[in-house]
Amino acid sequence: MTDKTSDPAWPSGISALTLFVEDLDTTKRFYREVFGLPVIFEDDNSAVFGFGDTLINLLRTTEAHELIEPARVASPDAGSRFQLTLAVDDVDAMCEELTARGVTLLNGPMDRPWGIRTASFRDPGGHIWEIAK
Image: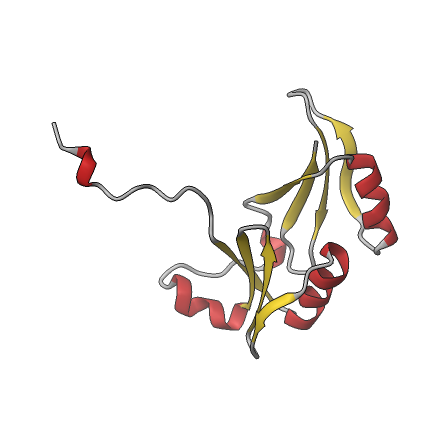
């Protein structure tokens, strides 16, 4: 049996998510206006926002190859492979707020069979966000 006391500790959270986007300016504006977040860092190819202890890095798809080679960047219309979930106090009230901010909901608000209420929407880069309670 291997002595696990010398193994490094597994991270306790996700420090950053990098989302590949075709239109950085539009997506940056969406994150600023919809989520009400300030830009923490930006350059010509990226913009970083803070969601609590997690950084959301919006990166132009033209620059993403350096990070993920030999993997390829999928186009936004290729379909979604993940969703990001934000816990909220009131899904219905947040849906009203999102709609007021110009967001089109994909679905919801709805009660799920597993006991939570959710709604989903897409950012300009094609990434799916869910709000849940």
